Each structure stands twice: as C-alpha cells, then as structure tokens.
Image: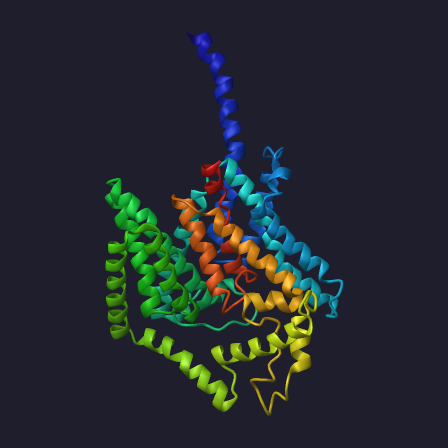
Length: 419
C-alpha cells in the first residue's frame, strides 16, 4: 500500500501545480478588483503580473475566441481609435493621450477567455465588494472629519478634500457603492433561500451601509438617475408581477421617507435646477448647465464630419476653436477634452462609424448576460449602469467606471454555463 501511495503522490503534486496554473491569473484579476476603488497606479501595475500569468494558460483556442462579437467589437473600437489618428489634426500628444482610455477594452477578450474556461470570477466580485465596503467605512469617517480623507496620501497633484469622499471623487465612489448595493440583492436572496442566514445578513448590512452612505453622506447626480433604473431592472427580471408591484410601492415609500429625513439628498436633487438657472440666466459655469453647452457644441462638431468624425484626440482643439471670450461669457468660453457624454465623445472623434461600433459593443455584451446566475446578474448590471451613466459622462473611457466595465463583462462565467 505504501508503494501505491508513493506512486500517487507525484500525480497529486502535478494536479496541484496544474490547478495553480489556472488559479493564479484569477487571483491577479481579483487583486486588480481589490485595488481599483483605491488607486489608479496600483491597478495599472497589477495588470503586469496578470498578463504574465495569462501567457502561461492554454491559449490554443484563443484566436477562435477573438472572432466572437463580444470579443471582436472591443478590439474594433480600439482599432478605430488607432486609425482615427491618421485624419486627426490634433497635436500628437493629444492623439496619444486619447488612445490611452480606449486601450483598456483590449483586456475584455482576455478576461472572457480566461473566465470562460476557468470560472473563478466570483473571486473578482468578492474582492471588489470587500474593497468598496472598506471605502464606505472610511467615507463615514471622513464625513465626521474630512482630514481623514486618504486623498492626503493616495492622490497625486492638487486635490480637494470633500466631505465623505474617501479617495478620488464622489462620482466614482457613488458608482461603486450603487453597483455593489444592487448587485448584492441577488446573492442575498439566494443565501436566504439556502438557509445561510448569517452570510445573508452580513451582505444585507453592507448593502444598507452603501445606501445609507449615498443618502446621508455624499452621492452623485448620475447615481441618483441610474440607481432607480437598476432597481427596476432587478424587479422585472427576478420578481413576479405582483411581487414587482409590491417592491415598487415599497421603493416609492422608502424614497419619500429618505427624501424627508435627508437634507443632503434634497440638496443634491435641487442642484439640477440650480445649475440650469445658473447657466441659462447668469451664463456661469455649472455642472448640468456646462454639460448642456458641451452637448450643443459637440452636436455641431458631429454635423461638420458625420461619417468618420474629426479623428482621435480632436475634441479639445475643436472646443478651443469654438470658444467665446472667457471673461465675457465663462460658460461658452470653456475649453474641454471631454463632452461628458459617451456617444458624443465617440461621434466627434469617429463619427457614425464609431457610434455604431459603440452601441454594437454594448448590445453584444447585454446579450451575453441573458439567463440566470450571479455572473449574468452582475454582468447585466455593469453594462446597464455603464450605458445609463454614459449619458452624463464618458464612463466607458474614464478610469474607474471603465475598469469596472472591463471586469464586469469578464462574463466568460456566463458564457461557460451556456456552452
């Protein structure tokens, strides 16, 4: 029997090494998700060991995997951005700078291939949720004492300490908290059904913490627009119509109650009207008012070159050429490189061709997450949130929301279950 055991031991070690070969890339992706809410440079550096580990996977089927729309369309948008440098009249530094935010989309086909075959993707969700929960705790502390903000240590260059913002800015923080709160609903329900009450209660407390932070500490207006729609998506997909109606009534009652007890929430909503009046009547720079001016000018730029746009990195130069006297009219004198709308950002640079690729990319990823399961639920939320928030921002190209999208559509887990 000892001889049999000794003969089996090498096979056991070989199996362990073989399993580690496929777990290691997943661990590095989880590390990326863990770092994402805190640091941009740390997230970027964490990509290097993951790419090295990915190169040691079995890649024989990788070329065939790239031919599917869910992988081909992100590559197509990157290629369009690279080719768009040829007809852009922007300076080369502007062109190169504009390419950077698009390149992250090349990671999507790699992650899909990885998690389609070695489904450790739940590690990514757990790492991201844990990291955001820690950010939430720091945010509550910063609301009490703004000097506790980690911007003092993790931000480069000039920064502004904001009450309740743990690190970076309130827009990214709200995106993270809103996504985690809604994404937690599915596993909470599943855990209660399985009788795992303690873990379900822990997740429930974390989700309530996210919502409480957004209600009483700090929240972006983009999150206020997208959060109710994400809740409606959950109700339509996972509840019967009677339960959906009851949930809608409960949400309406909760919204009214929170509106009553939260001055911060009322002030945030009131900024919509305040910004509009500030910009229309006083011609002053404001959040929503400035966006309307960016959109008006961007539509004019698109009309000038509707088919293939003005080329990669052309936005800032176009705004500079259309800017009025900044002293006489501060609003129309603004020069920006971001029109704060994903569709317009793509259309100005790459025209109708770019918009078609962008929307085909979103649609293909939505179709990828049809069905049941945690992977499908998280992936669907990530795509829907990105599409909605990109109406007010360029969240596919921005660092944190863009990487949330890239990690979220690492939905090879969902593809694996369908194959």
